[in-house]
Image 1 (cartoon, rainbow, N blue to C red):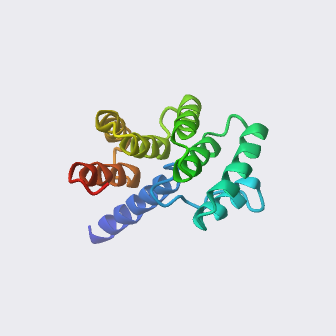
Image 2 (image 1 turned 120 degrees about the horizontal axis):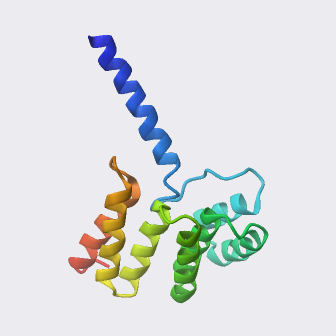
Length: 155
C-alpha cells in the first residue's frame, strides 16, 4: 500500500511539473524557449530589465511566427513593463486569439487591467484562470495576489 501511494505521489508531481512548464509563463516568465532564437534573446533581455530590446526582438519574432501565442504573450509583457499599456493589450489579446487557454496571457492581461485601474476586468481574468487551472497554478495564484494587493492599495 505504501508503494502505491509513493507511486501515485511521484506520478502526481510529474503531472504538476509538466503543467507548470506548459502554463505559458507566470509572474517570472519561464525559460522554455528554443536556444539561440530571437525568443530566447528576448526573454534574456526581459530578465535583465531591457524591455525595449526585448520588444524589438519579439516584434521580429511575431512577424516571423505570427501564430506563436507565447511570443505574443512575451511581447505584451515587455510592452507593459516598458509602459506601453495600450500596445500590451493588443499583444495579450492576440495571444488569446491564438490560444484562448493561455494561462500566462490571462494572468498578464489581468495585471495589465490592474495597471489601467480596471479591477472588474482583472477579476474576469482571474475567473477564467480559476476554470483553466484544475490544479493550483502559478498564473492564478499570482493574479489573485496582485488583485488583493490592488484592493489593499499596494499597487
